[in-house]
Amino acid sequence: MISCQTTNVGQERDTKEFLVTDNLALKSWLNKRFSIAYESATPQLIFEQEPFKEVKIRYSNLPADAPPFSFTSGGLSRRELLKEIANFWNLEMTIHTNSEGQPTFISATGKAEPGENSAASATS
Image 1: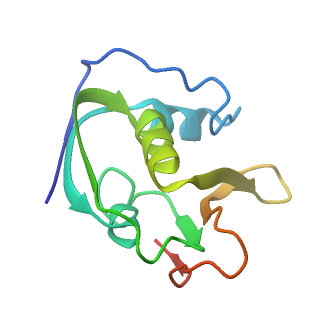
Image 2 (image 1 turned 30 degrees about the vertical axis):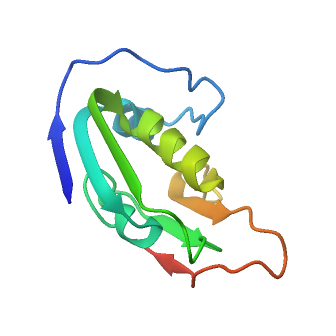
């Protein structure tokens, strides 16, 4: 189950060095706050749902046998939520840009060691 609503409530968490961008539109998108409730979300499902489906997120090497992500917050930003997800499933997230410096997608890559079990790659 996934529930998501826009909110202005919530205390900001430390994300100073996470998904840093100078692009004002992406910065605004990342900093928009939501009330969120995830119950047993999988890595593949989570990036295809609100509040992320507006931006292309390419994922690879996701843990195939990952524990489900259950998380509830009365107010946090997309950036804060992405950091929670990255920490929970041990993912590295990076903003990718085109030759003009415009953001094109965010990658979410599992940090699994070679030979470890991981799920197929996909794009949201």
